[in-house]
Length: 630
Image 1 (cartoon, rainbow, N blue to C red):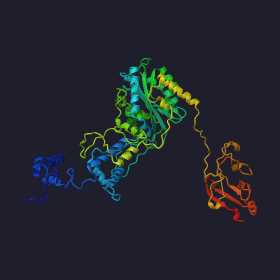
Image 2: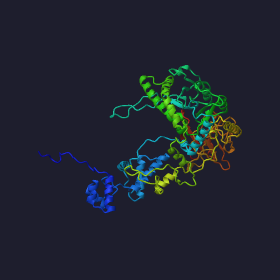
Image 3: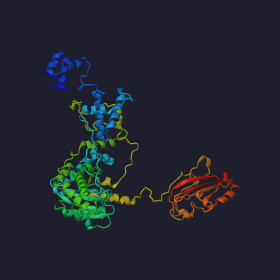
Image 4: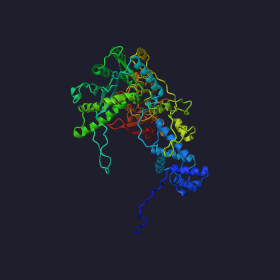
């Protein structure tokens, strides 16, 4: 029985040879003068395919059929290096920006014109040729953190930490090394991913809406022992009902905003934290407490109390908690996810009431127990390089933004070695370069963009603040404590250079200021000027900021009528056009009929502002040239 060739299944697969075999066959023919047929049979490649490369019909480096890519392998390698470096610095490109950048690059190489930009299809093929590239959602990094996380700062911190651990023999005492951190909780949680219909639009998740912010203070040591949570609720009086459903040992207090402050932090350490520190404390065997350098954590009474209790207070470097704070590295991330998941479950169980202030504590305590588990606590101190001590635990890629942003503006060119080395990777993912670094010669387009990162228009003034005194230092040591005391004493003596801000009533300005009272006027009414001025702080005009006699009414000698002293106002002015007069007065001092009688002898120009009864904003302004009406 005969079968049509169209119905027979294909027994051979398309291109069942490797690109390496084709490359070796090509080299055998070109370099060793071998025959095309012999090389094709030896390496198992089609003879016609090898002939196309030998005759120059197809690029020997082509690994797929179809038209050749827009860029050569070297040009694409330059583009890939640029994309990697910009992503490393924290200023990476989106898909659309990659296409735009590649189009500009192609135009500069005379391989495209501006009327024919590259397409999304080119981007997909480009990503296929370079498998080490991928589209990822970046993690946001605050600008202050990017500048502060430098290798010099981190290494100085670890050197000081090593000195303290050695001095007080804490390197083998994980139960004596603690970390304290704070986390803000909101009733309006972020819902997790849910399962829904694939055909419908984005599903909805009901939340509690805007609510209060509650602060939870957590702590644990390098051995994996957690301290029960401590809550700070917004309010004026602490109620026991706020702690309903809490874990044993949980406590809390209130503050006006729901955030921690100096008094709250001192109360937490003295009445709550010490209660659960099981390790003995002596002058020779103190405990080490690491935390961030928030202003509420640094004051002389707290330092003196800690020294009396044999507690070493060590402040982490400023704006580096994302790489050095143990609880931020491995505990509070899982805590937030668990908390949002439990809130989502609570909303489903209480669909009509939602999450109120009395439910936050119970939900947060359940999340706290799971997130600050012994395994997570031990892992957090290990990731922070604290126990065991390891200064190389921080990824060197985290230093790249600081190197770029803090580089000298007089020499904006990037120096060799400023960035972690990025090896050249071929289109199939094989590392083919021998130098192991970036190209020394970069296209001008990429060089300008990379060197522009960190260039400053103005050199900022260095300000001396408290965090610069305590950043990355043990503040309970005598030297550091004396510096803090000297700084605070100097701050009290030195008056502030900033002017005091005074709250003034909002006034809707309808015009710009001039030397004469009133706003700028149309060209046809050059002598019409109206003035809108802020009310003085007292009834006495001399007490106000406006004390120019030229701006006062020639009748009442005030800037504004006394009847409008306690309200937002709009003063309408009139100026006498009589020669050698030119006096200004409030329109309210004249009746319109009287003005019209006088206008026959001297010109007079008015400005009337009409306000709606229920609004302080001028809704309509009429310019009346009374002299033209007589």
